[in-house]
Length: 337
Ligand code: COA
Image 1 (tube, protein in one colour):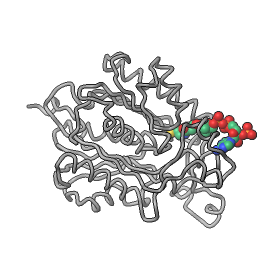
Image 2: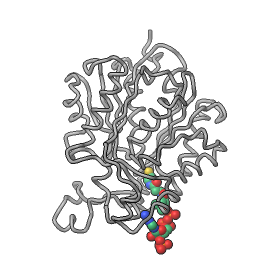
Image 3: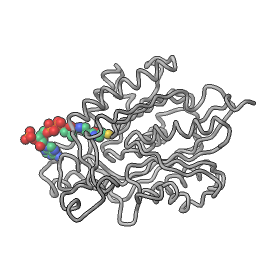
Image 4: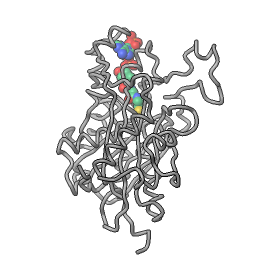
């Protein structure tokens, strides 16, 4: 069989979120905000906050271990690991290498991070798929793991109410079956709008100094209104373009699993696509925006809730800092429980 014939599907999925919940009521004691403002503007009720020593590699390892357990596989069965994160444990080595060691993956496999912010999981899925279709890797772990609480300025009410921590992992596998798993995709970026959502300090251009720390240069900063505008347009366009590429109509898609940024963004995208919100599951109320972890978290929940069924067409779509975006159409193959 030629390797070009291989399809790649999600054999198992696992998630992990920190125990600590930070509610809107608690936040309103930290900054000048209210439960009503946060819920109305974002749909978020609470978010999870990682404890000290609970890092993306730890959360990601737990999510990946859950996926392996559900697949009745062991870490030695994994041939490739890609971690999507914008909050790596450390600048280097990669979070993937740290996760590899924690999970006990083999040493003869590639382990690396993908940096595409909130679109990271969709980017990483595509990279994994393309590496696997060559036939060189049979099973891959793709992990989205984030600790946004470490880059949020907890005195800035315009951003701190929106983000949370968590991790999700999928175990991908190749199969000779046709028309299953990751069917088609689209990725894009616009670095000209990088300053709309960024962190200017702490990298090689502006290493951390006492002054940069005092000025809060290591925190995430965002132009919320502009990000909102771009997110709606680009997510709707990405869905339309990937559907047209795959020759599928939006009516045929059972579930849209969007990056969980903000409920009003999701509503605007659904409205542009002329799709009801009943086909746009959301867990924003409980987790907020967990960046690269948000799609696997939402996907796992929609599946365990009994929404996504074997054979369903599922469209995942993301948007994030960069700016970056991406969409992937999947034919759902019932994962192992
Ligand atoms: N609580 C109370 N008031 C707040 C607030 C908060 N947490 N944050 C901002 N405000 C205030 C502002 O200071 C402003 O006050 P002013 O009119 O006196 O200046 C007012 O609320 C309105 O602010 P505005 O920025 O116009 O609100 P908005 O309707 O644009 O909503 C966001 C703000 C951030 C919720 C919205 O722009 C958004 O969702 N953007 C996209 C963010 C996102 O999803 N980013 C990640 C993408 S991957």
